[in-house]
Length: 357
Image 1: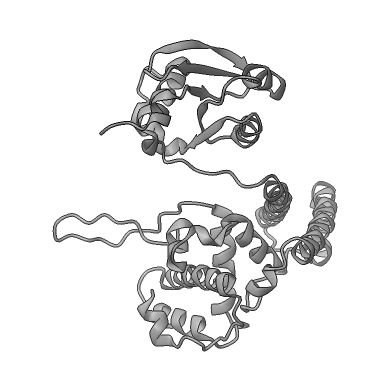
Image 2 (image 1 turned 60 degrees about the vertical axis):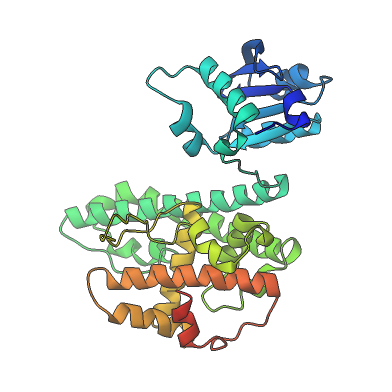
């Protein structure tokens, strides 16, 4: 196949990003090495190297530094390809891995086989800033859970048990139930849990304000019972551009909520979900699904559909139902986002829900 003029005339740079230093390899239009070397992974160093040069195609893998490197290079008028690290590693990496060779391989793939890089696109700087806030909240929640489990485990080891209660009320309700001999060790932990509660509530207020001021579309998603501001905001931040999907049903595979395929001949065993994409998004959607299926969830198509899946029985029937409802919920939220429709709990009917499963 004849190469395009644009492709044959451009210079390609392979950039293997490291935490402190990055290796680069520059190829001419014929694929010959022009220059190889190492450069500090800093904005100033990259700017000195790439500023004022003719526009080039720069190829590098997605990673910790790739978002700001991508924005910097594009601001300097260079074209970029951000390669999917998981896909690319299977192509060019071997037992004799070397950063210099990796840079050269990235450059070659960018010049001759760019489709094998499975390019991804980074989110906007605004989106990344809000995602950092939500991620920070998630870290605090996980830390609180770890401290609560620690307290329960220590008390249980002494022959006692702490009462069941919510994470928000844990520090207040269990204080009197801790044995006297353990209060010296667990008292500061309870105080820290209470401080975490205050910080988490502060994050929740920020998230509410961000939803109202920056992402009003979240109000459309929150029409569905069980979808709160956190889930709605993270859904918008994860998808970012709803038009990237031709069909709403494509969101399920994107979020890793569909079973793995392992078909061979007449065998087609049932596998677990792929768990591709954003782990926090899956966790939030499954949480919303558990609420919909739980005792406080209002009657709706989603609830009835999930209950029928759970009623089939078998191992982990309730978990499978929750994941199935989470997948259906991800599709519904995308549909509401695209259309802006008013959510009707029984709008589609249970038969249509089953058909789209």
